[in-house]
Image (cartoon, rainbow over all chains, first blue to last red; front, side, top):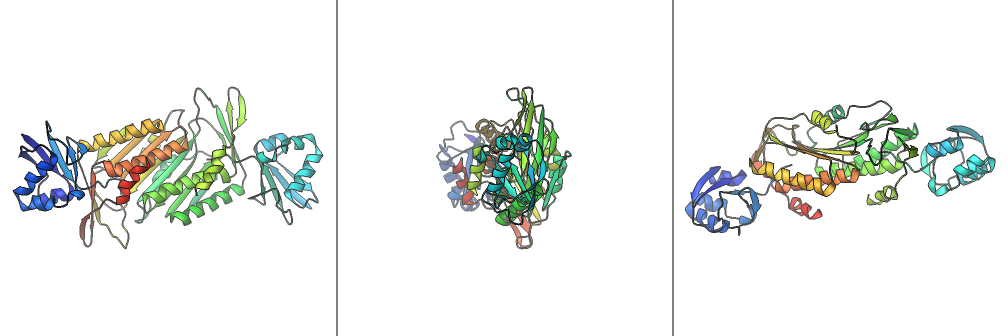
Length: 83
Length: 83
Length: 147
Length: 147
């Protein structure tokens, strides 16, 4: 399954790119994170503290337990600081 | 003692004038009200329900117990409705 | 700090723009405008606002000063009209400028609560069935206990 | 209801003026503006705002819709910039129009609380000592429990 994975703010900076397509068999966001962390150090570093990271699936905020079934886009980013 | 007495909103309308000079021996605002009510019906009607009237002495909100000693101006009006 | 009491209309947008020109310490600006309402259920053709010249300015200044002290405002603006206003006209505005959002919001809310119950203005509404003085609400006075 | 996400500056005074042109049911208008701060203690030379195109607009619309429902707002406006901003520039504004004051104030406060923690914006401050991502405060998340 191909999923677009997007990163924002310091997650983007640590991983070093804003967006990539990932071919994954992960069932949940948490599984996807495990896969990514296994890839390279920069991913492992970026995802070291998951309490500092929020996730959106198809542009809806959700949790790391969320299913990836039928999902097109997963986004990782720090807590938001708008306003 | 001569005191300027001013009226606003429906107090002014009931008494029928916005301002008058009153020659009074009243010691407190309450005494002044008693004097005014004794004058004419329109005063008696205007001051019938004192819970609906606020008072300012020399342009400071106060109570009916306030002394008139050295006072130049007493104002009577309903609760304020600005904003 | 600027306190204005006037019969003339004022330009709300221009006042907001001018007030927003603050120095580097300001991160948050709140403004409130009160407008003459008229609805089919409660039609108003004219609103007359009476005030107590002299006391009005003093009361507004005192309320504004207290807001500046309590919330460390960088700036505050109060404009209040008197005289005859038509539906849709802006009756008054307050604006607050502070370092942070909570202070600007709370101070504006405080200003409105105090202005409503402590500044000597009285509103009379004219409508098809005559004219009535707007009655103060018990909740207006109770609102002061919040502060 | 108008939701705008743009890189370009916007004219706060003109937006306030335009928003204030409401129909007869509106008695209260609240607006809030967030401004890039820079103080001698915490100098900022530039603020960069990143956002998540698509999700940003959807999140803001959802928050605004909820405010309209809960406080029976007659109108709501949200403008939020992204990109590079200098100190003193207006980052964003919200405005609410309601029949009465309490609704307009509460709804604006609600919008800001939710926008801060649920709309995908991230701020980075540049200063003489480098650049840092602004950290969310625990109180930001806690503020949502008020509603």
